Length: 312
Image (cartoon, rainbow, N blue to C red; front, side):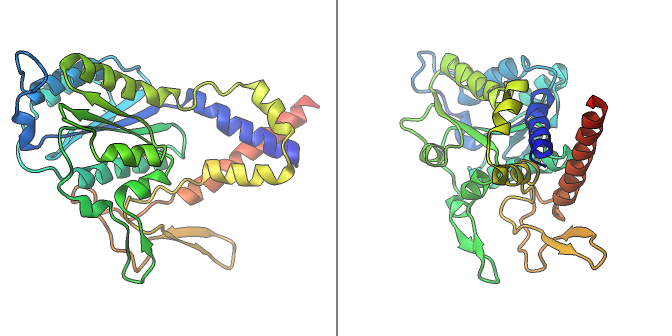
């Protein structure tokens, strides 16, 4: 049994090497982005500099990287493969205006990644990149609270931190570090960087976009399998479960209720006491990922058994 579980775990881990990368960039489109950069001699407009950096960096991503660009006015470019012409046109059409509902759109961006991860049956690497020039105007969304039934309700960043999604942030032309820097650091989510001029902004954005493909690419192949065999039996059940049962319900909502019928069929449904938090005004009925993960694990186990028989 230990050999079988080790094989399944090795397949899951090495499978990430060939999976796609998914990046959602939350791009600040507030009115302050129409201001001029203070630390640059000719003082270009922040929005113009940010657009140029975004187009340059995202246009260079690999074919297995899917990118979405989310502004405070909605999706400029929905999460998908990069069509360089369409992406450039989409970014150029972004216009600054309004306040900074940063956490609302961080929540929406992370939820979009979770929805995609559910569709991909937990395969792939997922990262949120935040580009902003000011503090959030909706800090209350980042505070822990309770649901109507009294159960704990996590703030946006606390909820994201337990979902296995990386988060990088770039403070654009700010006099000090953005408040989100401390959150990213304390939760070990990723990196906070400064973008105080066109060059540093482009470099920071390149680093953030590149990091997603470094999360789990070099898994070690056969060496991993040999190392796994040395671990105690109890490790495998926990590890396989952890790798195949990430919670993909929307940020800010309670996990779906798991129900097992008398005939052993497992289904999920939204918690009836859930205070739904629609992403971008769209309803979300929860995720059936738990069921899909179990099916996927069963298929993987079957493949390993066939391989073992063939090897004999």
